[in-house]
Length: 412
Figure 1 (spheres, rainbow, N blue to C red):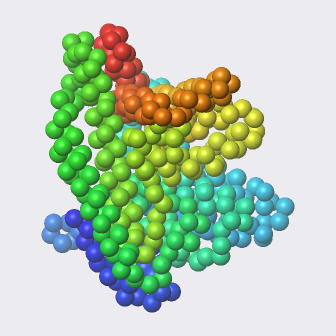
Figure 2 (figure 1 turned 90 degrees about the vertical axis):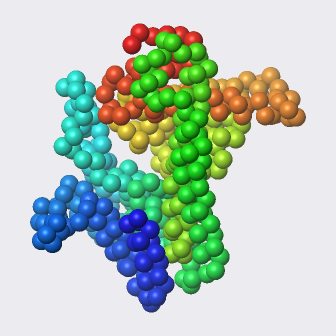
Figure 3 (figure 1 turned 120 degrees about the vertical axis):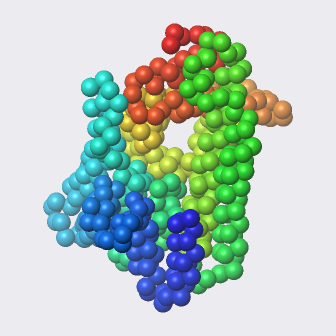
């Protein structure tokens, strides 16, 4: 309810303000909304609660203000660094990656060493993966001269824009600059509102009611009865898990894109019917497209340039995507699983070209890859559905599910 109230009020005020104030306003209202997510600053009797002012989430938002200022000042004054200029952007990138690692990966590593679940006292900041990747993109593109002149308020709005802050898409700053409408347009209101409705239908009707009602059991129940289930029961679980998460995640993207459109911002698309992808390479051009494009630009291409080994670049890319989700064995394995799939597809393409099997790309043969890709992607959700705390036992649970899908039973 807070989100919708904030959206309704801020959209009206946004378009009521002079154009020069709008970026600053949307940045401030976004920060205020994120600051409010930890609850009220006042106790039940109306007294100001100083302890509530600096909860861990709010502390990390204050850290984010510092990061925003540092990235803006450094990246827009690179010419002043003289002989130190080549080190400025790498230092920023290493710094934000260390910050990301401290909150997202160090607790998991400590848990592995101690042989117990994660340290719950280390709270992962809201949207840390999203804003970290946006900072890195911004710094690299500034160093390449690809970012047009802009104000601090515009950069602030880009980093904090509340509809996309916690669940993406990972917007590019150059796209953000070029896809802004200075006047309220009828099309923006209609398309934005329609997109929000589509997202709500996906979230609450398709995923929340229809698909969930078809799921016969949860992950824990599946694991407890794995030795008694047929392999098609396991596949049914994996397929429905895939569809539910797809609908849920794409719903959030629809709502984020639609809500941003009400402010005149056309945000990058994140999904394009990945369930219809004819191969795994094409799938990653349709699923979480902003993350895939980011990793292609800043992981795949640099790795390929350094090693001249496309398969090494593929595995590094998917390892990065896995770690982006979580620093656990489950998502490392998830990345390797997808890296293996894409590498196998590349190898298969080489064989097809060498053998001149062009008939496989024509007529009814060109559709055979859709169900194969769909089932391969569904298999990866064994790693996703068993991930909770990052404990190593969850990786073994994922292996049990994958093996059971092929009729092989592993001991619990």
